[in-house]
Length: 172
Image (cartoon, rainbow, N blue to C red; front, side, top):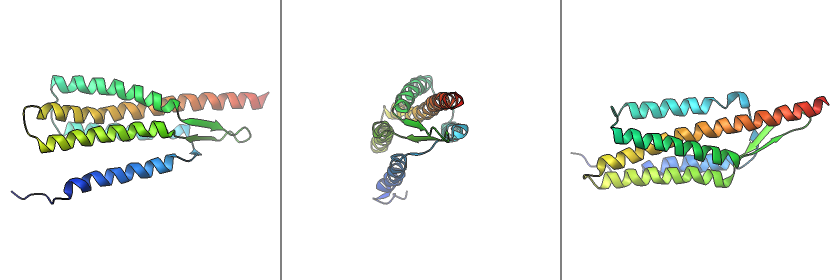
């Protein structure tokens, strides 16, 4: 059997880490917020993670329990992260802008670290806990679904309310 190159583990970790750093840099500045397009990322992430989990076959009851707990935890973290997102409305143009909080972005890094830590540990040690560790790693994917969906929903609700208030104030 052919062994993977010694630096293969580092490469699989480095690429997502670079992507996350780029996303953090992009989100650290204010940018235009389009409420009408906030549904796109949740749809993409649900589809991709659904496909990833579907390829693994039917989950065990234990995995489903982890996934349900992870979905709830992710939704709570997403709501919490969205509460730290700064949303502003231009009083003249009613254009919305948002800026992600550095604290909220650390949540994403934490989930990334947990997932890759569990995957790395699973790859290094094959034993009785292997299925449990895979279930935990998969639950971290489901957690990201809850996080993204709840975050986008909270931002959409807050932004819509702020925009309606600005329009009502302008009408007076």
